[in-house]
Image (cartoon, rainbow, N blue to C red):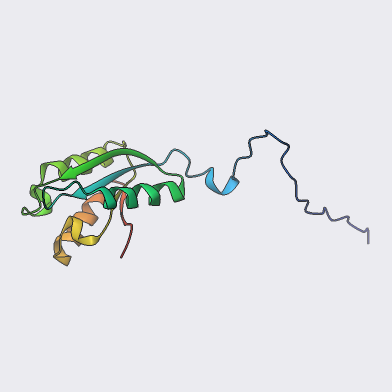
Amino acid sequence: MASRKRSRSMICRPKVGEVVKDPARQDIKGFQVVIYLAKAGPAFPELEMRTCEAYALTFGWEVALTVVDDEMEKPPQERSRLVAVLRTIKGGGAGAMLIPSRATLSPIDGEFDEFARQIEKAGGFVQVTRR
C-alpha cells in the first residue's frame, strides 16, 4: 500500500499592509438590511438606532435604509412606512429588517407574527437585535 503524505495546515501571517479577507464573511458581504425604528415621543430613538447599526456591523451587513415611524398606534399592515419596508424587501433592496425589540412591530404577538410571515414570504426575515 502506498503511503500518502498529508498536507499540514499552516498559519499564514499577513504581511504589513496586506488586506486579508475573512472567508467566513465572504458569503454575507453586501447583505443589505433595513433598520426600522418606532418613535413614540418627541425624542429621536438614537439608542435603538445605534444598537441596530452595531448589530448589522457585527455581521458585516450594510444598512440600506433607516426608517423612523411615528404611526405606532396603527396595526403593522396600516403603517405606510412599514409597508414601504416590506416593498423594499420584496423588490430585493434588502434581505432583512432589523428592529430593536418585538414591540417595535407590535406588542401583540399575533400581529408581530403575521407581519414577520409577510417579510419571510417576500424573501427576507425580521431580526430582533435585543431581547
